[in-house]
Image (cartoon, rainbow, N blue to C red; front, side):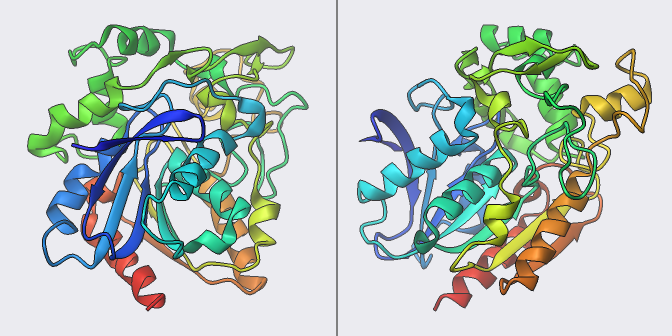
Length: 352
């Protein structure tokens, strides 16, 4: 299901639900998935003849059925945000009314960047399991201070090569811990049964990821600091390195400031103060040899950073609500859809 739209110089695939005149809601997926990752949530909780919402879920470049256009990591997540702006400019919602933007994981970073660049187009932000406003990895405190000058331990060189190889071959097995299915079932959710009958369709979204130096994971460069790799300038994982993506100050300075709903799971394995995808935390656990210790390379306080930035946002005149979801993993809209739906309803009602 979906349509193709030529916008921003690339061919983009989008899924749409609801009446054209409905309140506009834009769903932005995360890394190693696609707009299809939202389908069960929309199908079971939002779609139907009575819905007052016009819902659009695009596939970001290099995911799903959108064009695998190259990603310039030196722009942070702005390539993706520009693609969203181009879709809106192509008449995606049939009006220029501000939209409620709902992000998941990396998609929250895209949503933040889009809001910073086009605050007049955003009626509200719903952030589920968001990447920190200071990027992913390589920072030591609530102010986002870099661990090393070259942001070692972040970017394209941090990806597991066997996982990449299995993405490339479309591996649907689940025996090896680095298989896409095993990663999805162990890291995307806290309870592997959460996907239910949608497991194969959700695996399809993971396997839709375009691989290579221009897409996932991107390139890398050597570093003199542990773990001896630093971010490159191309591809997806580099876009989230704090070398290129650090939007806290711009977010706090936003004018106007849309209301923000932030939901995070206490059992999230990916975005956490003890993330199993943060090489500093893996080093602390002994899973990556040579870790130089907590003083030199502490784990990134991802949740704490987001809270600190949103508290500053509120102090500067904005409004945000934090909802922690006990026992929830990295996919609140899959595991705790009722709470996500309630947050969305609050944001859409706030703009009536």
